[in-house]
Image 1 (spheres, one colour):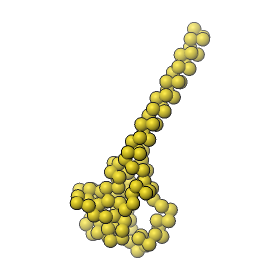
Image 2 (cartoon, rainbow, N blue to C red):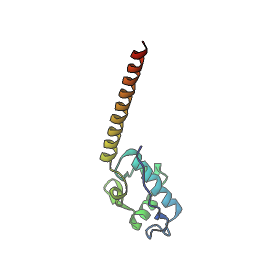
Image 3 (cartoon, rainbow, N blue to C red):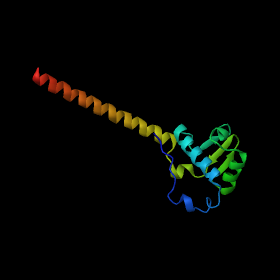
Image 4 (spheres, rainbow, N blue to C red):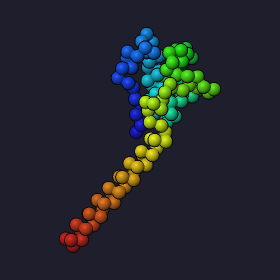
Length: 119
């Protein structure tokens, strides 16, 4: 599972003060979605309404400097500075799978040794 990180000073950041709660909600849902989908902070245009936003919300986030506009959607500002990249998440997942597989193999080996000692 990847995590979408929100700075603990987000509530008082100059880019955020005065933004409507609706827009902050979109930013938060889009960040969680992007993290879940491993898009590196990219939000496709087609996802805007699915995430509960509209064009005005997106313009507000762009004007605030929280998103930038791309040809086919929006990009979170400085995503990689705060969140792991798709490549990093996938590498972590693979290391975690390997670690768990090693642990299971060692556990099975110990069970086999203990079973053989009593048999």
